[in-house]
Length: 230
Ligand code: CA
Image (cartoon, rainbow, N blue to C red; front, top):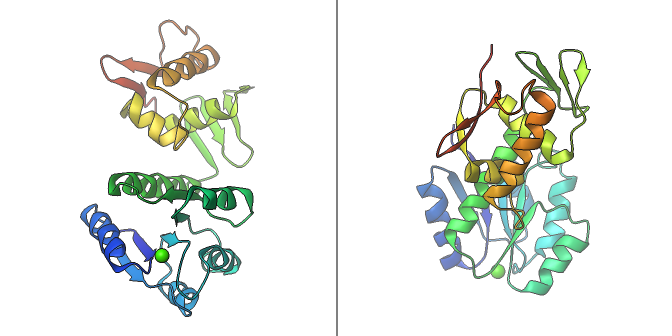
């Protein structure tokens, strides 16, 4: 099932550029002009993600986002704001509007597609079961705890997120860039080296012999893999 994305944007040219790029990446799209009935249209369409312009002719994008958050059907739907000026960013971040991300115009379609992908993936991970067990590992998402056998690990938030990602995708190799994208998302202050540092710390916690790991192994010239021990 293709993911459905609502594009709320009154500038026809920009709307069709976004539409073209999302469609090309396999998403099913719907363009809304952002006039008075937009909230009702969104409630009917129940999109998986909303790209929302701030400057709309009849409604304020921020106000619309607040209404989206109050709507039962869309309270958890990711919203990515399109803002025209940097100072609007302060409003997105400073007020509790409920947006999940923002992009400042002008932006590259590639950047938008990357953000859309990242948010939809996060949604999917949220929908995964509360407890995942692989080999001796048991991960409790709700309580954010991880056990190896009976022993509970003491992990930082990022280490937890990284281990959660590995445990959710056993047996698959990931490059450092893929891991950055999946675990760190839109943080700008990380480099591929960051992944190595966190992998090393994780190994110290989960491996009997961190220098010759059994679970979290290195894929030479590529990245890392969590061995499927089941
Ligand atoms: Ca506009």
